Image 1 (spheres, rainbow, N blue to C red):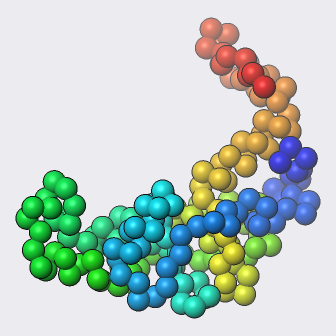
Image 2: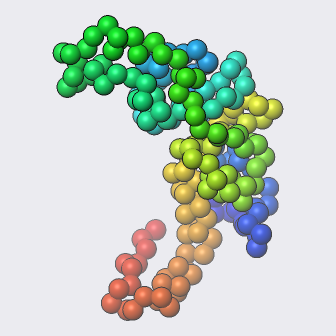
Image 3: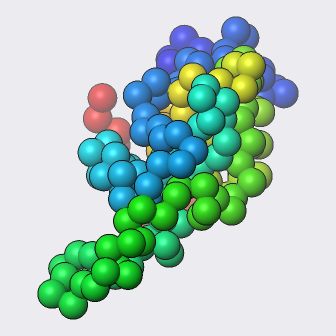
Length: 178
């Protein structure tokens, strides 16, 4: 990360989305029951899941999207009141709750394109695709970590200088420890 340089246009020499994408992410096929998607998301400890048809990207579902379809009586503290119709919500299909218009970004996307896509989509992750097939995802956390690494690794000595111009001396941030 520290060796990566960004020019005045925000483009990086040789940077591609695949450099910061996570290749291990939750995926389900069309027709998957909601409950199965929930369990997969819990296994990955994330709040999103990628929906595909074969290998083709279809969309991104969040836990909030899925919870709209599941009965609250499936889990504690309401489990004792669960009825047959509540259990039936476990078999609702994931695609019934897909309402976000999330676009894939190409695996060759520049840093500028990634940031623009992140700001322009209402999704917890950006799917990275090649020929419609999802290769990985870039989460907002991963993008911020990468950008912070650029900011601090490129010119750490510049950060305190900028702060001193903006903040009075008594409000200066503590010195950075490497």
